[in-house]
Image (cartoon, rainbow, N blue to C red; front, side):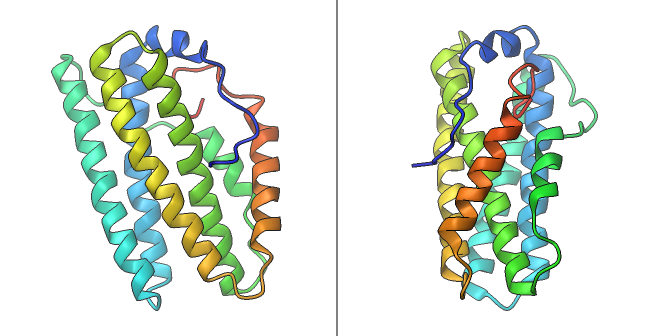
Length: 193
């Protein structure tokens, strides 16, 4: 369903398990950034009421996920660390078209968002199937389902509002690009690292 061309090596979970505190902090900030991204889409595109309503729900879910991760951090006797830079997301951002029409920008922002949700979903699946900590395995299984739903929402609105944009062609370009950068990831205890 997601169409990702490069799967995460399950051995990445060994890296994650070596520093659970680090991945939980990174994950918390990923959730905060996802909420901010959805809010930004609302601010820049208020004239799409159906999309705004769906994005409000995503914002609420992402903030709830942030809280859930924060609660896991506290339960483990830790504190939320400082925000981390997400190199993967920054590399994806470079691929967004920034010189087209407002409509083209919206479509690419939706595809950018769909791509991040797709990769997060895939990573959560790998975690849920391979991490030894049963609480975290269940947690990531539940979040995997939510991320798949967010992916579907973003890709659906991109298709709905494409208006003359070859959406399947552009999505294939996103998948190809994402595959090329993913070769450099899977080596750190971060959600996208």
